[in-house]
Length: 168
Image (cartoon, rainbow, N blue to C red; front, side):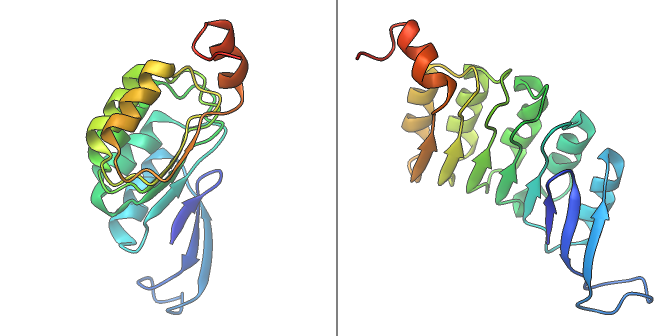
């Protein structure tokens, strides 16, 4: 199962109610409070994805209900996603292997610091289009030793060059 783009649960059903057969495909739109219920009753969910409007309730529910199961979080284009909103996911979803926060322009080095401390199993990370600086990327590199893929493209290329972080 996965909570996918725009907070839709997809996968195959494997539990009550009686009117749904085991293995039936499902696609259910969800919002903040519903996420908690789904995570409690669908133990196979390992991936969450949300883009566009990423409510704090959604992120808090992901961090509160069996966060150790979540291995993938796609939160790209979350319009107002900042350090405070992302903090619960970074602190409690310690088994994340994939994190995409691309174009979350309010993320700073504070989030990079939490990533470096809490996400030791992280293998892929997309920070493109965030406000994380060279210092934050160094923190991630120093703490996430399993990292295989790091995307710092988009705004980094020009913004970092203008700030003198990159030489031409």
